[in-house]
Amino acid sequence: MKRRTINTCLAISLLILCYSCTHPKEIAVEPINEEFNNEYLTGKGLDTNFFNTTDVMQYYQVSNHDGLNADQILSNLHDFSMASYPPAKLVHIQQLTILFYKKKLFVDYRDHLYESARDNDTRRLYDYGDELLASISFERIKNDPKKMSLKEFLYDKDKFKKELIDTISVP
Image 1 (cartoon, rainbow, N blue to C red):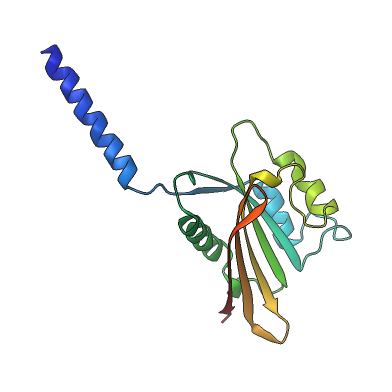
Image 2 (cartoon, rainbow, N blue to C red):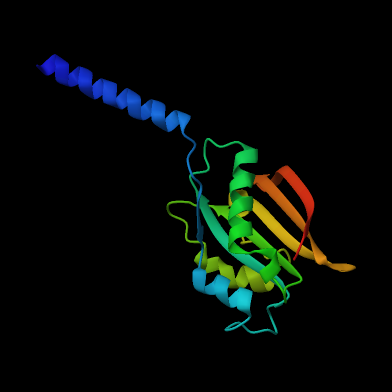
């Protein structure tokens, strides 16, 4: 009886292990600070003397990306960006840059958002360059307002790992 229980537990454990290895994990994306992202996107609640309302930043943290290759990570973040920020709805925005940081257990990026967005030229979070996973940027093309440049970068310790650049049409 005891041996049968052990064998059953072993079989279930192996099934769970095989399932988790063969089924890709879903990336989890969550805003670092939803209120700040909303204020930055709409321009309401932030001092427009310090924050540009046509060149907007959004800040997110990502988990469950380990074990995925560069193409899978960028594909997941691309899909998230297109669903969350459809280019057709970015009417008054010249450029939107979305920064994705690796979610860390004991790191609270919120404390650095306001200062980094206001004071830093790149508007990346101070002291967390190594934690930057990716950035996706939509930029309206000046000569053709019905088109946007889409730039996607994947980083490894603040260095480019993969880069995709495309032009998309805006209805």
